[in-house]
Image 1 (cartoon, helix red, strand yellow):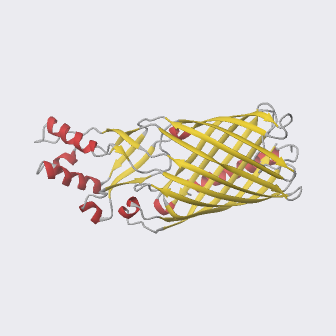
Image 2 (tube, helix red, strand yellow; image 1 turned 45 degrees about the horizontal axis):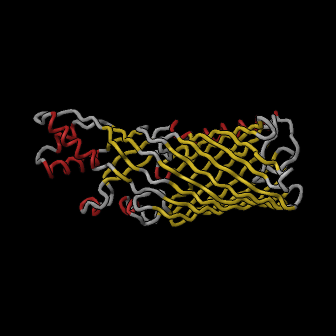
Length: 372
């Protein structure tokens, strides 16, 4: 049984158990962008979806011979939950998981834990509601894992355009971070609209593990031979199984709007737009310890290692921006349970070496919301 299947079953089992034990709270639409739990109220919004992707034609995709390749089905699982500490303050926990078997890449794509505070509840502000929130980014709990390989596109290896590639294991950059954001909105009869903006600072570290493949060793050996003839095969014998990299701190930001129209007491329709700026990652140091293989000397190995490590330093040119359109149709099954069917379509622009740029990216799924 795969890890993703186990995770899905655990989530569904837990959701059912909580639902069976729940005491219904008042009938609120949990899809409402201004929803916030009252004191003592717990809510969960758990979703499962399938994504369809087509890779773009940037340098990274050409190096992998992956231009226009289809990735489907990509499993997407998320949990948005909270607890009302007071009527104005709530604890927030958000988790997202992507399972992409097409490229053997899976892991947590989102993880946040924080507090939301309702500055204005609309009573004395002409109906306007204003929230501020702060979250810890939990990406530091998981290492950035990858394998260094020689690019499958031999032409780009020969001409030096993109000779080495990373095959990423997951979606975590391995850095802890802090989010700060705000949201404001209002309800006009049956329609509720809200706008939000948030910014994140991640903190650079070396929480990473990059394995060195045999194909990468072959390239490194040839690279060493070009400057020190005959030393390449000896040098790669001393390479470790993996190394780590020091990544720089980054800034990211998101903004957008959310809207909900309550058709009647049971049915509602929601839509939204969000812009997400994904930061460009940069390497400021490579932590690589190479053993000396005679007749090479320690000094020779140190010099070669410095040159090899230096070739990785600087920007990875892997940033990208996303423009996400979303929609959902929801029905209340009871005062405390709601079922939504959602869809998302994402346009994006990516830098030359980003492995996240797409020509087409769409997702559809279901979401189960409940509170008690």
